[in-house]
Length: 279
Image: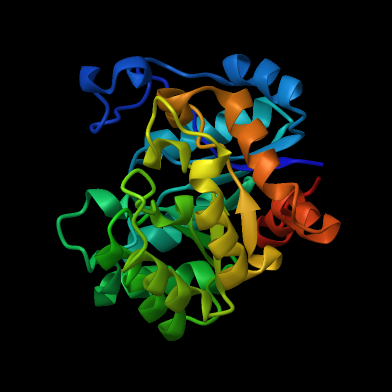
């Protein structure tokens, strides 16, 4: 079984995505389950986790609606205002009435404060997730943002955290530090996981291949082990540098040298455990 732990839908007619505009080229349109479904079948992907694209209730409600219509959407990572714990608590309990609601994400990479996650009220909001056995998807794109994760992991050891896209390593520049050191610090906490996702758009969009990503994926495996590593496509953002099938094929080339158990973990096992998916 293959579970894609990171894909999105957006409907420009129903939800406002303030960050999305014509400068994003092919992304500046609606993307639907009907468009993704045949690509999943062609790639042999059985289930997905649908992840928020906007810091809004409208986006979360839209995702939960789509999850109720398509059985292959196994889980939804939505949004609540973590900095407003009272309101977040009410909305979490409402969203949890849907059995596919599994966690929360906030677009921390769009916040001007690189230490946004360390605010007292945000930590209080994150504690609400831990109390409900919900997970938190962290989407740092700067090393300083990634540096928040060990702090949060230590303060809330019961909160399961997953780092989206390996925090966007400097693949195009063939860079390494300080990304590698900071990722290792994150992995020292057993409640922190990572997604092998979104790496094609961190590389050279025109020429990337498995060879460009391999060292970064190998290092992530070394840090987290397969029990805390999971696959994600980052579709439709991935179309900026290829298509769904290419992402799956190039990841397969990298994973092929791992043991069978490691591959089973990364393709599906870790996702099932982390998001508590019914597959």
